[in-house]
Length: 208
Image (cartoon, rainbow, N blue to C red; front, side):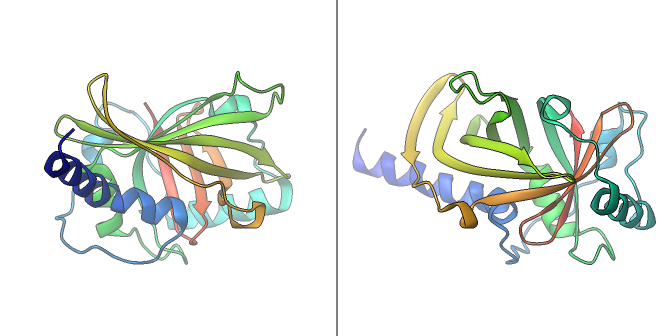
């Protein structure tokens, strides 16, 4: 690959990955250049309604006090990011939510077949724009009563269809520096998943 093409792909990788990286690493920075996209477009084919402010607060209190009942097997699958709520759950974050929906952000959990640890999960977070897909892959595991999903993403790939255009490896962080989601609830026939991210924002996923 010539140097100009490499730099172009690298630039696309960085720009396109910004919204997902902000969420997964807990950054509170904003990127105010996208118009708002309606999450109703993603929910149109689903009979389920996302929880409102009061319901989210109630569900999180219940998860902290009694546990959410979420286990590794119950989150296996592919999940679309459909809504991001601000740290204090006062309102949905329209910019952040729009960015993640605009880039078709998803996260996939599968059983990690490369380890003897039956509770360890393979984690793939991805975004897509036009024909390009950026995938962040790694491993994670659930721990605690609520529980907490601790994970790290150690590889980035830029793909066009089945062709891999660029691969980058990332250094595994110390345990205390790993990203995490505090799981809140799994509702509506296990189709809606909510969790609080490392930066405090609450995310809602719809099962794909």
